[in-house]
Amino acid sequence: MPDEDGLAVDVAAMMETIDRQIVRLFPTTNVCCEPGRFIPGTAANFVASVIGTKDRNGHPWYILDEGIYGAFSGILFDHWHYPLFTFANGPVEKATIAGPSCDGIDVLYEDYETPRLEIGDHVLATDMGAYTSVSATRFNGFEIAPTYVYEEEIATDAKGEEQDFRAAARS
Image 1 (cartoon, helix red, strand yellow):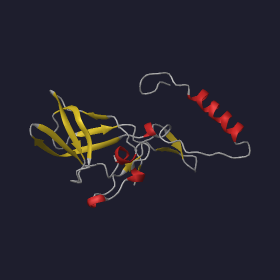
Image 2 (cartoon, helix red, strand yellow):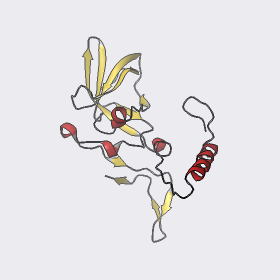
Image 3 (spheres, helix red, strand yellow):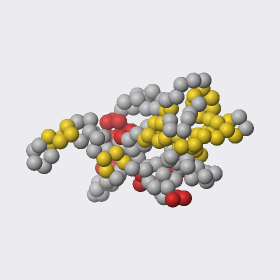
Image 4 (cartoon, one colour):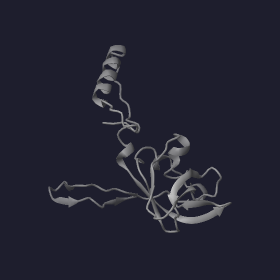
């Protein structure tokens, strides 16, 4: 599998080497570890809405309904960069994308290149499956964003009946 720079990464060989060294160095210790971003990182995407626009000295600002104190907390706590996509058309310009809290630290992206956005437009942040909702807060009274689970398959329930879980929601 390629890494973010397109270089080939042999995860199986890497894990085998790590496992061999753990067994060698700690032969009587059972080692369990969580997968960090490696497995769950790409498991979730996040859709946010533009709830406000401003122009500051000719530089557009777009305010989302989610920010640094919510699902984007990994920007602050983990120094993580979530890929962001907008769907507007038109000339591209550099903009600031911020969260709703009115706190000066609630800036998600600076100099983000995008066509002009309008209130109600959506943005998509990908690779948000790790450490997002678990560190979200209700800072300034904003509720934690709801989680919607989407499965791309039909599953069998405990009674052996097929259930369509593709749009099941949980909060």
